[in-house]
Length: 271
Image (cartoon, one colour):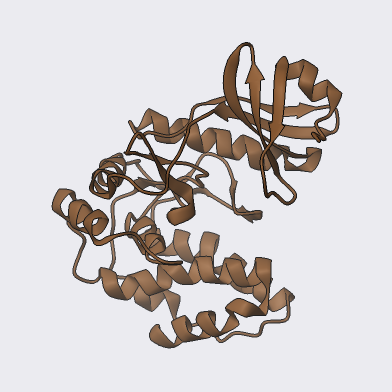
């Protein structure tokens, strides 16, 4: 039984609605809008900025030539925030080598500074952006420090490593990043790669590669094709632990102490 607000149905001209399994605060639907199949995300009106940021990220990926769902509309109708996007039939298996090449091509799209024109979200957690010429300063001030502060607020008292020391000699290009690229945010349509649910900004491309190694990782052909198209620096295996600490802290702050051991183990690798 759909729980869509009638004002939202009317605003989007929805003819058919089918709620999809799962969901929490956000709910997902297959819908017909104007005679076309679409994918709809909805949530409380307070999630309008989160869904608007996702639409912004999808547009940025597509503008860089990446296959990502097209966002058609986002906003608030009645009591519900919404995001209406292209409906794609996705599979979990396909051409992972093509996915590696597609990500390398995305990272060739660069900006003049690190950051993004708007704040966005990493999962439900606010992610602050702005602009900065210095990568180490951006990563520490806009990514790591807010997560450490939130962990402290949540009762997790962690010893912070010397983050500047780890990055002070690293001067990457400001590459356009997906920002949240784990296996659940990539798929295949007719075997060809698609990425979605982004959290985009201009940053060190190693951040995207690092996250692909969390939570199961991608097949070897993905990494081989990426490195063939855009070889990674030899220091990447050390920095990836720092970059993944951001996501592990975020999971600790969202889901609780189940991630504490992994956070502490990663902190140990950085000392």
